[in-house]
Amino acid sequence: MKNYILILYFVFFSVTIFAQDSGVSVGADRIFSDKSELIEGKSIGLITNHTGRLSDGTHLIEKFLAYDSANLKVLFGPEHGIVGNAPDGKSISDSSLASTGIPIYSLYGDVRKPTPEMLEGVDLLIFDIQDIGSRYYTYISTMYHCMEAAAENDIPMLILDRPNPIGGIQVEGPLRTEKFKSFVAIAPVPIVHGMTVGELATLFNEEGFITSDKKADLTVAKMKNWKREYLYDDCGIPWVKPSPNMPTLETALLYPGLCLLEGVNISEGRGTYKPFIQIGAPFIDSDELINELKKSPVSGIEFSPAEFTPVSIDTMSKYPKYLDEKCYGVEFKIVDENFNSLRFGIYLLSSLKDLYPDNFEFRRNWIDKLYGSTALKEELKGSNNPETVFNSWQNDLTNFINIRNKYLLY
Image 1 (tube, rainbow, N blue to C red):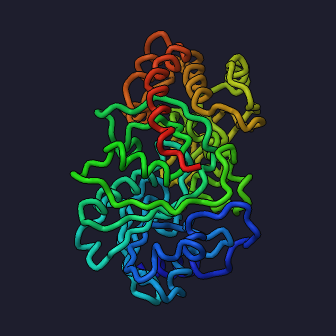
Image 2: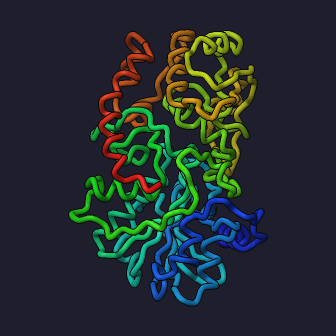
Image 3: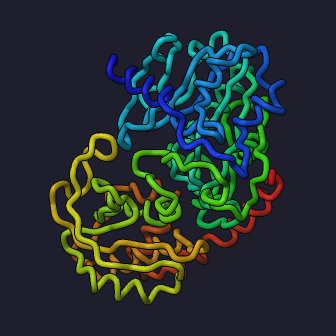
C-alpha cells in the first residue's frame, strides 16, 4: 500500500505534462473559470483517474487541493485504478491520497457503486474521466453506477465533459439486449455511440436507463470549441492514454472492432506494446490472412505481416492469450479517419473463421457480452455472412439515432 501511495503522489504531483494553448476547453477547465458557481462551497466526491486533467495538463486533484472555495472530501477510482496503471480486469483496493489522508474508494473491486457510507458528508459528486467512445469501455459503466448512487442519495452530480476521441459523428453497431447487461455493456446503446460522456449521462438519465426510482440531479459542464467531426488530435489537448492498453489514438480508433477478438482464441495484441494494433495466433498464416482481408469492402486500413510473442507485462496484461508462444498475424495501420472499425472487426472474425475452422474457437460467452446478444456468434457459426450481421442492427440503430439526437450538446 505504501508503494502504491508513493506512485500515486508521483503521478499526480510531478511535472505537469506538455502544457499548451488548447483549442478545446474541457469541462474541468470551465469549473475554475466561467462555471465556478457549480463547485463553490461544496464538499466534493470526485470520480476520476490519471486522465482527469485540465487542458494545460494540471490534474484536477491538484487543482482542487489548491482551491480554497471547495472541499475535496473523497475520491473514487475506476478500472485500472486512480493512477491508471493496473492491468485489465485486476481488482483494485481502497487506499488514501498521500499527504492529505483523503480516502480513495475503488469502484472496481467488490464495490462498483458508491455506498451511502462512502458518500457521507458529500454534497456534490463530480465525474471526470476520459472515455474512448466504445460501449465496452468500462468508464461509462462507472459513471452509470455513480449516477444511480447520486440519485439514490439525493446528491447532485456534475459531469465534466471531454472529447469523444474517435469523433462524435459515426454511430454503429447493435444495441445490447437486456439479458446481456453487464459492466462491458451497461446500457442499450450501440457499440460506437458517437457521444461524449456528458451526452451519454444525459441520455442515461432522461431515458430511464439508470435503475434508481428517480432521476439524478444532473449538470454537465460543457466543453468549449469542440466539434463533432474532431478526432482527439484535432483538439489541441495532449493525449494521456486512458488505460494501459490504449496507448495511442490509433489504438482507440481500432478498438471498437478489434476488441471483439477478446471473445475468441485470437490474440488481440495484449502482452505486447501494440495492443489492438496487431493480432495473431500460432496457427495463422499472415500472408493468407492479409490476402483474405484485402477482399473486405471496408476501406481506410493497411495491412502488414506481424510476428510477436505475448509476455506478462505488469502494468498492461499479466496473463495474455498465448503467453510466451510465438504468434503470427497482421499489423494494422489506419490511413483514413473515416475507417469503420466495427465492420472491419466483424469481417476479420469472419475471415478467421473461414480460414481456420479447425482452430477458431469462442471463449465461453464473452463475445456475446461484448456484442450485447448472441446474434454475432450465431451468424459466425452459421452462414458467416458479415452483411447479414450489419443488416440485423439497422432498424434498432435508426431508432437509437433518433433518440440520441435529443441529447447532443454540440
